[in-house]
Image 1 (cartoon, rainbow, N blue to C red):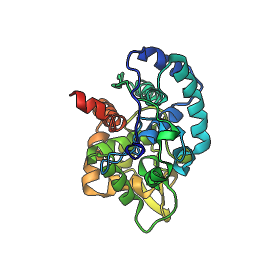
Image 2: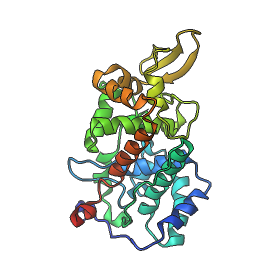
Image 3: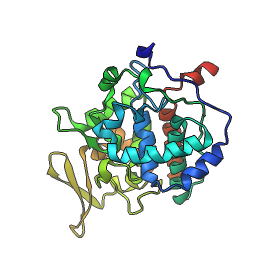
Image 4: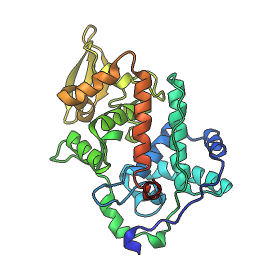
Length: 294
């Protein structure tokens, strides 16, 4: 039934490495690959089990036109990945997730950690005929702290909206922390905004966000409703800018403990592996077929 958000089964018998190689050789940037996979999967809600990457509904109305999905950028990425999916005769849903995985592996390697992001093929592509456009409108995100984005100013604080999104996605506090820190250094902010990108090597999956967030060499200065400057104490120079969502990981006692853990000099590898585990959880959140096989 259409109200059950049906998704046909996808292929599982194909050369995953060959698909990833074509993705790597495309003209897509790392941020475009990771962002599109994230936007496709972030709609999942554990409250009613709706949304998620399976079905690739991000290419269909209404999701393709949501402001938070950056329609112009999304259309470009979907066009490139659709050609790759057609070449290998696989679903676009799988291809989108594989693109994100390939981008993360590339970024981790650049940061000195070789990792293979686990992938479970078998997603299908839903059709518009099997998509209740009106009922999907309620899934539209109005904020995504992981990408430092707000549709508009709300009475609710941005960091509270982050918590709401994280709990809907079924994330724990450590998973929320590691994902946000990783997304910042990968340069996946909405509109490539600079807030919270506490690194000089954007595109590398480093733990720089946590290192620089907790560094006492900097002080935070509010310069707007949801904007701060990160200032070097010695020189007075502005090093970075940040949002409330960024700085809550330094100001909240519990979240700061997680941030300090990942900021440790010897925790770069731990950070990457934890990021990958949380990423895979998000990508597979709606794969009820995998749960049934266990």
